[in-house]
Amino acid sequence: MNINLTLFGQMISFVIFVLICMKYIWPPVMKAIEDRQSKIADGLAAADKATQDLSDAKDKVADMLSEAKFKASEIIEQANKRKSQIIDEARVEANKEREMIVSLGHAEVMSEKSKTEDELRKKLSSLVISGTEKIIEKSIDEDLHKEILDKIKADI
Picture 1 (cartoon, rainbow, N blue to C red):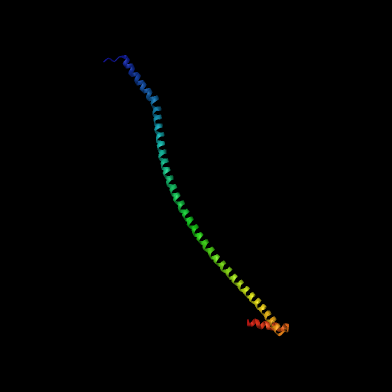
Picture 2: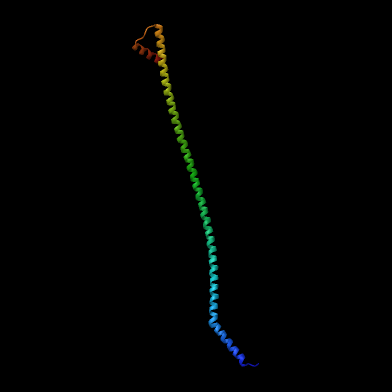
């Protein structure tokens, strides 16, 4: 095998080329690759974190929703209790008012009955007196008239 100067020159050129590549080209390429790997790793980590955050948010929303449903059911239950209480209070108040109206009506009826009875007694007395006057054909004086009316009222 003949090692000639061309082969030797090519080897030296190749070694120089490799050294230049290792010194000036290889580090930026490796840095770009490492930066890209770092960005990809950061993106994957961010995606994992976002997935975890989404899962946590879903859990939190589910908890908040169940808590809201529980509070809503409590509010509805309290509203139903209050409704029942208001209805009962209104019923009691209506019964009291009804009893008061009935008792006032009863008192008014009794008062009217008493007035009517007094009026009937007076009319009956005047009819009896006028009838008696016609029978006796004489007029009774006022004092005697009152005395007779009082006796008739007492008898009636």
